[in-house]
View (tube, one colour):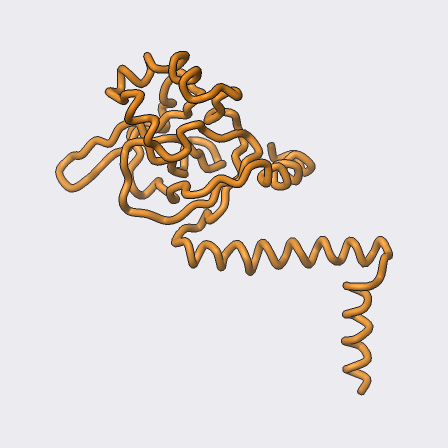
Length: 190
């Protein structure tokens, strides 16, 4: 009976107590649940170690422009890569995405020009950019990416091999990534 009484007290403390300590315990429990159960579970289901990624930069933003206005301002960069307006208009996330968005990522072995991928770059954070070129060399392929808002490809995104690719973006959830960015800023990581 004493064990049942203790469990009941803990349950009431977590769910019904309005104290500051209860609130802190709830935050810690939520963090543990997400970090060690939900996130790895999604990774297992989606086939990647990065099932959700918060966008931490504006490199894929289109500055609030509609597609035609954005294309007019940027088409020369894509002309050099043999990407037409019609090609780009059919790409997933053709209107880019913003800092603070949350992207859902699936593991994949099939990539096409225009796909948005997450890969490891020269920095510690994963990078999420659009594929602008795929080069084949016998059985090996190399991918080149570029942020839609960048003037060109960075050095660490010109010859991306499959070992550096963490997954492909399949869904955008606006603004939800600001929670992660807030925590990173709070702890001085960003």
